Image (cartoon, rainbow, N blue to C red; front, side):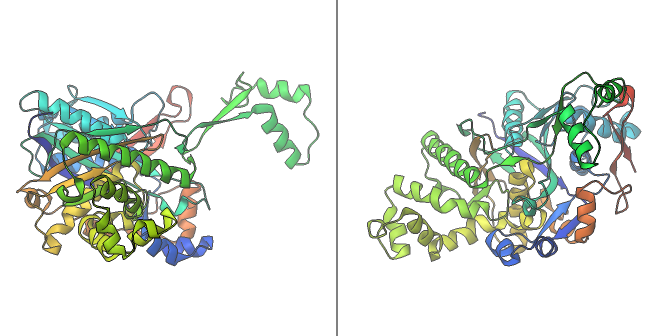
Length: 482
């Protein structure tokens, strides 16, 4: 990737509903101060009954197409990064493509995107960065190529789990081209990867007869007889009537080890950062004017950076700067964790947070975890706040530190372009957040447990109409445009 390529336009989509973090904390008996000031949480976006990863992605891409007046012939590919796929074979991006073609049909006729390559890329939260890097390379190869990358996810955790309060949802779409008007990417991406089990979404398995026996026991019925088993096996309901002895269950809720995942985050990002510095002969401590992190919760970046940056200062022979900021030498502090804590509370570190990290956190504080979209939403947050705060980001280099469980980090950078303010004017990220519909905890619980029959709010744009239940439509998703 030697050409001047990058982000030419950007847009987003968020669920219509939001749950204040105070309401969740009260219902679950959690310390709200810890959630707000320790993790940076204020609220979380919640999908209504007719919203999902497809409607969010389609809405984000449509806003991009409409705002940029794109002719579908200009779009060579639409690559989706997600870990919320709705099917194990049919790409989620094909549902998105169908909605876009239906929307474009009025002006361009049927199947106006039939030439367009689409694919899903999945690697936990870093999948959209993979799609982004792949598409940048594709754009750079040939003149006039344009690609759309969309990151879309719904982060959902089991009730009362330690991940529940970090939930969120949303999508970010980006138009990639040569001579971009928002961000020109540097050519080097650095990678660190290792197979880990810090976070995954497996298919849980259950023995069918054991499930039935347990249900019988709970109902106070007698032990199963061969006659009952044969009667069940003769049914054609797709569950009891299948010949399979094992029932597979897929849940949106992950199995995860939070502390171990933090360790993996630090290890992967640290390794990728060192490789990035070696590739570019740069020192990120001086050369980056801002840092954009993957944010499973708003303050994840600032909480991980003390340990990571300590190694960078040491590698650069600048440990004395930290010691001066702390007022103690590292050799005088017996515990490394204590030294890192002192560093994180120093005025120098707080200055780094304020200037380089905090602007990227503000949208996440109100949305929650967006999985693949979180790093790109952090970028949109930063550049959206720049005009408001009077900061001139033009020609400033921004570093991106991505992470996906399983585990992989990619570190890359780019330079903000002179026309970026024109390109984001009118996108109104924070106005959109302010217009979200607040729901109470009971409504959130009903949505989370899929107890509702109708959406809470009025639908406009793309919506999930139904999921097929019979024959060849079983599990197929049907969408409306309103």
